[in-house]
Image 1 (tube, rainbow, N blue to C red):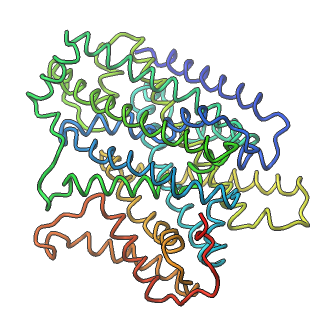
Image 2 (cartoon, one colour; image 1 turned 90 degrees about the vertical axis):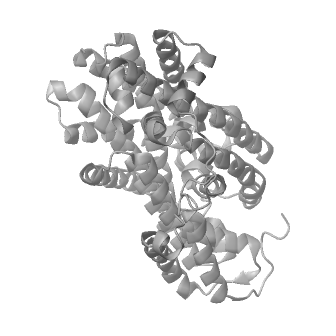
Length: 490
């Protein structure tokens, strides 16, 4: 495998991204960075969001789970799909009605400044951990299969990649990443299809033959019917739906792109069309997972989990063009999530924590300088988290990602649900305490679930339990509202 050629391809790829960034960021200002001047095309956002949602985690880790869990993950994907309808028809109308730049401004209008800051901080924590987990996985693969042979370290790779992401996002923000995400989603899906078709051809299988071969190995098992199992289908579907509501509908990164569309109707078209496309894309990733396990069995390859797909693509004698497709697909899968997260975290910290839009005495030039400082600071935080995950890697990061989401998005989901579903006011002095206590209680419950719940194992419904505890505590400490809820007339 010629690592130098592969590295050259990566460099060319980044050069294209920088060219797009330069072109799209001309005449950009803070409104361009935060919400793309509300002029993004809905179909462009919908397509680019596929790359943001799938990420390098899906590209590597989802196929790697098929050998041990079959198509279990598709139960969660169905839940995702259902959740997008809630986002489209409950949350998006709220955001457009209030003309929000940061979606957490809703919490201030409805519940108060402390709830607003608490919600924004939980988003910052959640998105930082999720984005850096995804980024770490791709850097690990690049180091192991491309750069090790050239003596390039993991640490240097991480620094260079984050530096390149900074270069193409620091000026244009959302205005730029709507276009770069579209390019990267295209490459990722093309790489996925090429790998599926080539491996099917190599194994002399058509789709029906592939399905029968996977059935014989038990890879296509799908519906889990044991209610006590962590993979029970109702728990997976419900958990998936709430993960979507929290990680998409209550996530500044994802909603920042949606509210950059000029009107609600087009934004809803974006969300629904995106949901169906994502359903298909995840199925193909699982199909690929079954294929690579069949291929590994035929070729005597012993790698499993997150290492299997990279091993087959880079070190199993496949044609060089397949390795190139895999590499471009992998890079294209990670950067829509990393660049979008960096932009969204910068936006949220500047607007929600620093109150940049509330300070009329500050000039536009000073606001831009502050935004750039925050943007660079988050890049350094990303770097630190990537180094941390290198030390605690357990070999299957997709499950780690879902667990992290369950603990960190639960309080955020509870705050929004309380604001939308009730007409009561929270006692703001209790909100930060409640939002810290509920994940801690969930962690304790998770450690002893089988022991104290008659063998019941908590799975993706951890997010629902966490949000439910926080919601109950918010309700118990709340008081009757003194004014009409701003959501009543939606």
